[in-house]
Length: 374
Ligand SMILES: Cc1cc2nc3c(=O)[nH]c(=O)nc-3n(C[C@H](O)[C@H](O)[C@H](O)COP(=O)(O)OP(=O)(O)OC[C@H]3O[C@@H](n4cnc5c(N)ncnc54)[C@H](O)[C@@H]3O)c2cc1C
Image 1 (tube, rainbow, N blue to C red):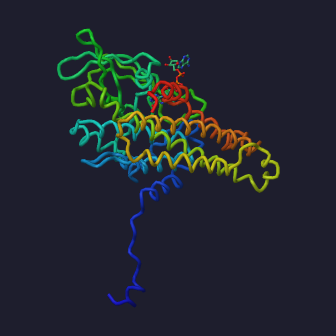
Image 2 (spheres, rainbow, N blue to C red):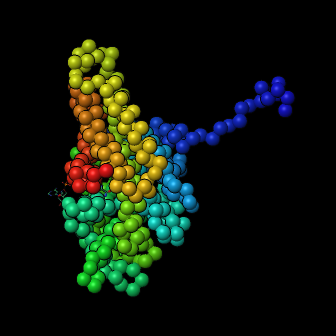
Image 3 (tube, rainbow, N blue to C red):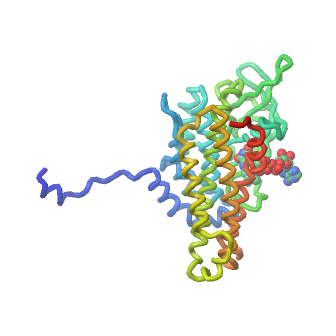
C-alpha cells in the first residue's frame, strides 16, 4: 500500500484491553445499580459481564508460567471504586478459580475451573473459618469421614458469599484417622444433596453479595472434587494470593474516597483544609500501597515467610487505609454525605468490611506478631 493510501485508509481496530472492557461494564452496568446493590440486589448480570470481559482469568496459572495477580487486583479495584459488594463478589470468584488452578486436579481445572474463569459458573469460598483455625483463632466447623469414592462432610459455615444453589465454593474439613487429624480441601456444590443454603441480608452493608449460611448434612464430596489432601503444602501455595487479591477492594475504596473529597473542594475547601488529612495525603498513601501490592503480585507462590509477612503488612495497610479514607471522605463531604442516599456514608459502611473480612485487622496483627521475624 502506498503512503498516501495508508494515510487515508481506516485505522486498524485495536482490541480493547481487559481494563477497558471492565471499565465499560463498571460504567454502564454497575454504576446505575450501586444503590440497589447496597439495599440487597445481587448484581448477577454485572458479575457475568465481568466474566465475559475476562476479569476472572487474568490471575490463573497456566502451564509453567508463574501467575501475576496485578491485573486481577486492578480490575477488582475498578469495581471497588463504585461498589465494594461487587468487588468482594469478584474476589470470591477469583479465589475459587485460584484454588482450582493452584491444585493438581487437572480434570477439575478443565471442567469447573474453566467455567469459573469465564464466569459461566459463579462461586466463592468458605475459607474464613479454616483461615482462622490455621492461625489458632477458631475450631474447624466442617468434619469429614472417608467413605468409598470420597468423603462424607457435616457441619455449618456461617457465611459464604457469591453463591446460590447453582454455585460452587471452596471448603476445608478435618478428617480424624488413626488417632491423627488431617485437613482436606475440596470444591463443594450448592446443589449437592444435604447442602442447605440460607440467604443472610442482615448486615449494615454488603447486602448484595448473595451471602449464605451453609449447612452440610452428611454431604458426599467425591474424590473428583478434592483440591488437596492433605492441605498443608497446598495452603502455603494459595494463602498469599488469597490475602493479596483482597487489596483490590482496598485500593478501590481509597481511590473513591479521594474522589469524594476532591468533589467538594471548590465549595468546602476553605474549611475542609483544616481537617487533618487531605486528598493529597491519601494519594501519596495509595501510590505507595499500590507500588508494594503490584510488586508482591508478581510472585504469589513465593513460599518464604518474608514474602508472606510483606503480603500481610500490605493487606493490613489496605484495610486501615480504607477505613481512614472513608472516615475522612465523610468529614470532607459533611451533611451531603450523611443523608440516606449519600455516597460517603455508604462507602464508610463498606470500608469496615475490608477491615473485618478474614483475615480481619485483628487477625492480621496476630499473624504478624507470631510469624518468625525476618
Ligand atoms: C457480608 C459478609 C460476607 C462474608 N462472606 C464470607 C465468605 O464468602 N466466606 C467466608 O468464609 N466468610 C465470609 N464472611 C466472614 C468474614 O470473612 C469474617 O470471618 C467475619 O466477618 C468475622 O471475622 P472476624 O475475624 O472479625 O471474627 P469475629 O466476628 O471477631 O468472630 C467470629 C465469631 O463470632 C461469633 N459470632 C458471629 N456473629 C455473631 C453474632 N451475631 N452474635 C454472636 N456471636 C457471633 C461466631 O462464633 C464467629 O465464629 C463474611 C462476613 C460478612 C459480614
